Every structure is written in structure tokens, then in C-alpha cells.
Length: 603
Image (cartoon, rainbow, N blue to C red; front, side, top):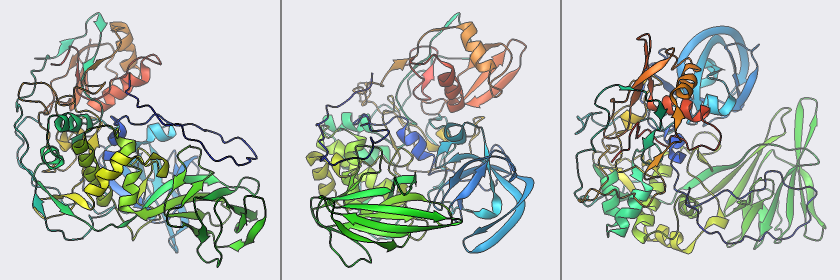
């Protein structure tokens, strides 16, 4: 059962509402995410040089907004969605198809080649759109610049996949602020040998099948519960980070502005426009020479006529008095005063209060869709991130370690010269809940580590500080996790993302406080397991009679080989295997939570 932290009751200021807000809910919080950075990490690591092999992948990004994704390589195929500039798109192949032509970034682009796409922003196409692949016109995309991989020194242990999609490169290089770097302390000694595996060879499926495992999430980088355990044992934040990010030092960076997408593709209408309230102080709109009082409301109203949409800004006081009404630019910035905040009333969540600026970006042409981006300083942004990622009640040094990791993770992804936002406010990036999530203990940890980031010892660039909920007693090499669907290694080796044992000298796991430190699935009959894997072409070997679970890295499975009664075999990544299992298990039954699993309990 997931660990939940008791929440304070949040009381929203009473205003009349024309309609009930759909989707009003407060999601569970304070659960360090297992699969959270699973999808996030998929937006950071893949280093591939070809887009023509289904075993490899490359990363591209749209050259303009509203690039359409289709079910096949032709404009006659149905549309499944659009992607904007800054999106990170995983391409597994380039294919010939139907001709297309479109205006993009001020230029007419045409051709007949299409990208075959498996993931968008680290999330698999199947989870986003319900199909295995979508297709995008190649001339509307450009290849992302891949970071330079770290030296490929041989690991100390033999080379799982925690993601539903292959990982991708970060959008830009790290910020260039040149800090004075400070070597991080050497991590404490822990056992270096992995627990013995329980599978010396292929295992015949027993009559009753139960999968046993450890940990939650992809297992790369910092284990949040592991950091909690290390801090409880007296380790400092610097020591914790030195363990999880090898060959790094601590440096500093400037308090740069970040851009967070907090509302995406809102379908505004004249009767249901985007609405923003100023709270706790005065506020203003750039380009309008007026200051509006607290609790005044902005309505960003579209009017569409034929192929043209125009926008109007209507501001009313709390008593309904009109304070401003007039045509406006389709892209406006709303600014809160010092100490004030902005309530994005149109966001279907209780987490709708923001410091800084809300940039409202209305659609062009006939589109009345609106994106809203929160623009604010990095240190202010972190105040809404850290308490959404871990419990504010954890030991101070673990909160500081999380603050530094979260700051570094965000800084690695900043790309101020491209697109309209840097990261999402959900599990596609770090979870960000804005002002209402802020807590005294996490604010203090952020202030105590202000500007501190993790940098590589080799060249001082900011590290891609991936993190996950619980490693299960061990973390994993990045290249063993971000593999192809068949378990082939496709990611570059990062010297600071090396897996290792995460146990005390007595052998106990540092993440033992996690509710997912150890877990198991329900028990199923052999025929159930056989039918589930026969139903998917990737694992269909007829009647599966045995599993080979020996291809492991430091701890996690890299791939699983299924063996059929007729001798046929199929190898898939551990992530594909568990995604198929999780999709077929009865609703409500426990899932396979990570790629650290076996058919017998893992020590």
C-alpha cells in the first residue's frame, strides 16, 4: 500500500462559479515516485546516430508548434495528436509514405518521408494514443543535439527497463555559469557484490506463478528512499549525492528563469475562456497600463471567424465591476505583485496557485486552444517541486539532497532560446504543484542549498541527475535500463550514472522504509501467464513453458527470454515484459513495480 502523508485542508476562496470544475481532485502526494522518473528519464539519455533501425532510436523535436502525429505515414491517416516546439520525440525508423506539405517556422515544407515515432516526451505512444507507433512528417522536425557521452569505462559488475519508452536526449546543454567546484565527499563503503540471483538458468514455469521483486522505478541515479535511509544514518547531502552520482562535484549556478507548462491545449470558448485571478496582492498585464486589485478576474476570450481567431482581455473586480475590456495580443503575460500569486482557475486541479508570471498563449489561425506557462526563478520553482517529490518530514539532509538533484535535473533541461516552455509540471518532467505545495522544511532546504548543483568532475557540466523512488537495495547503470524493446543496449554510458549496491555494511537496504522495498504479485495459474504472453506478438512463442531471467546488470533485469513448447524463443526488454504482464493482470492486482524481479524472493 502506498505511503500517504496527511494533508492540510486547503480552503479555496469562495467565488461564484458558472459551472462545476471538471476533474476537481487532489492527487495523492508525498509518494516518492517509482515510475515517475521512469518516464522522465526517458527524456534524457539516448545517444543514437541512426534512425533507420528498429533496434536504435534518435531524438527529434518539432521545428514549429502544432505538428500533427498520425496513425500512418500519410495525410490520409487519422490524426492522434499534435506536438509543439520543445517536445522530445523518439524516432525508431524513417519510412516512405504519402506526400505532405505544410507551413512551418515561416517556410513551406514538403516531402514524402515520415518518422516512425515510439515515444513523446518520454511517454510511450501506446500509453498516450493507444497505438504502437505514430508518424510525423520528417521535414517538420529537426534532430536534437545529443550530449557527449561519458567515457565508457568497464563497469565493475555485469551490465532494467523502468520506462514505457526509450530514453531521449536532453533539449539543450547545461547552463554555462562557471562555478567554483567543490569535490563531493567520498561515499561510505557498502557491500559491492549483488545479492545472489535465484535463477541459474532458464526456469520452467511452475503450475502457480508469482513474481517477486524489489524497488519502484527505473533504478538510475538517486534513490529517494535510499537517500532517506542514508540521511537517517547520519550521512550528509553531499555524501549521499556522491554515492548516487559517481565522479561528480558540487558547484553552483545562477538563479535562472524557468518556464513550466501548467495548462496544455485548453479548449477556450467565448463562454468558457481561460480565467485567472490575482490573489494576495495587486497584479498587472504586460502592455496594459493598469494595476488590478486582489481578487479581480481576467478572462482571456477567443472569437473565431472563419480561419481567424482574435482575443479579448476582460478584467472584472470582485464585485463584478468592469476594470478593463479590449482586444489583446494572443500571447500575454500576467504578473503577480511581490508577495501575491495568480490562481489559474481554468486548471482542473486544486494545485492552481502560482508565483511569478503566467504567460497565456492563444492559438493562431482558427485555433482557440490555449497553453499557459508559469515563468519564475529556479529557486522559487523548486519550492513547488521538492515537497511534491518527497515528504517534508524526512531528515533534513535527504531533503537537501533532493533539492540539489531537482535543481540539477531542471538546469540540465533549460533551453531558453527554443520553444515556449522548458518542462512540464507533471511526471513527464518533475512534479510541480506551485505555491500551495510549499512547506517550511523544504523551503529551508532549498534556501540552504541555493544555487548548488551536481557537475561532472571531468568538464564541470551540469549532470543529468535522474532519481526514482526506491532502488530495492541497488541502483543500475543507465545503459542497462534504457534499452530497445528487445533488450539491446542503445544508450551511451554516463560515468556518473553507474549502478551499485545500496546497502549498509550489515547488508540491509538503505531504502527499507519504502513500502515498495519488497513486493510480490498475486499468484496466477500457468495457463493464465501463457495466455497473456501469447496474446502479444512481441512475446508470442505459442505456449510459453520457461523463462530465462539471467540477463541482469548490477541488479535489474535487462531482458527476458521466453521459451515456447516448440523450442521457439523471443527476447524482450524487462520493461516490455512487465508492461505486458501489468496490462493483462486483473484490475486491482499488484503490478510488477520495477525490473528487479524474479520467480522467487530476492534477498
